[in-house]
Length: 83
Image (tube, rainbow, N blue to C red; front, side, top):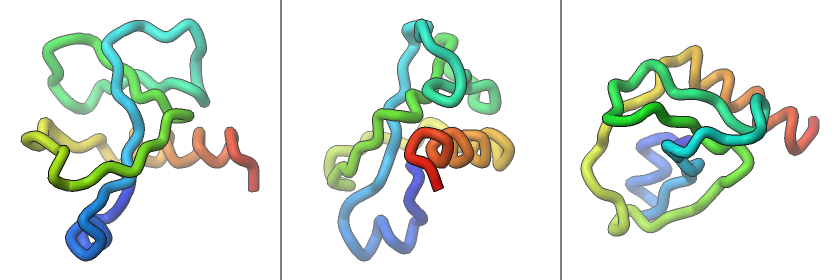
């Protein structure tokens, strides 16, 4: 999730980016490999695929990106949409 907990609680939604275990054909800034969370498979954040989801659709939390990886996601998003 990109959105903060207080936003999620008050709105009943989260802003998130897609996660995939299929190695993307493109690199950063469109995709970033996740290394800070021990996932069952090698995984990538698909930075260009932003979604707003109901909190009711979410399952259990599997982890959080490191502050450095989150910063890279935000920088990649800024690169995609521009300043």
